[in-house]
Length: 318
Image (cartoon, rainbow, N blue to C red; front, side):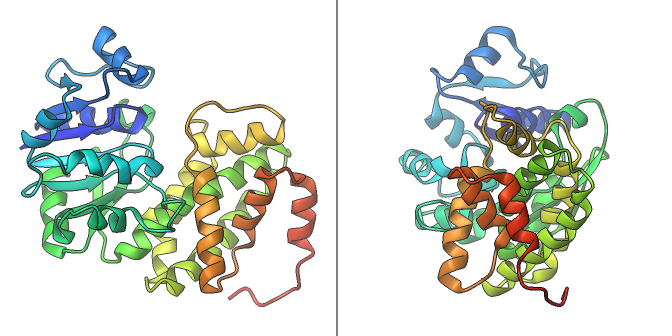
């Protein structure tokens, strides 16, 4: 199987490494002027992985798209719509697209598969691949479980059979709305976990896991998905891995923000929090933790926000 991975940052590097690991012909695409691509091109490795020599590096988007059976995309979620404008200039009609990214478009509140469909991609040729896992663990042979979901059960089954291995146990997703929303909002809760660490209150993470998942379950249900997805691999499973991992960008962003320090790498949860707060307001869903993240980003004190969260009116847990 010919796989092209578009994006060669942290997770894109893993997708290229993993696709080669399980025996596929792989091209890793990056822009010529991208620091991530330059490092791989010049050294054959980056801070996360030694890229196998069998993986072909390319800065030619047309070639990378048109030679592939499956196109994996792993870039910043906010750049997806513009990226698809470039992709659709080429022969893409018979390709399967797998989105290995977690986010919601900030301007529109759209899920990423919705962005793909609006960009001209066939609904039945789009899938998402999400769940817990860090490249630093996978490349050391430490396994995990993930989920693939799509609008087509047949496509989901096919992709799972293509990508399965003893390193990743895949589960079949059957709720594309819940899977996408759960995966995207995991990054928001990762920021909150970092805030708890930054405030030296790690014991709050237990309550955070429970109440954060309820917040997202309500949102998923209101959008027409299955609220149980919030308790699956796409959200709670990935969330737990984020809460306690030193590898998580979002958790680290929240921790350093509270300490008055800057985290310079991509933390998708920042933009996703903006999108989710706006979306939740439109559909009338309460998302207090997400709203608190936004207020904190705008300059409110994390200590004060914590007090406000605890002083809200009391209610039933479920």
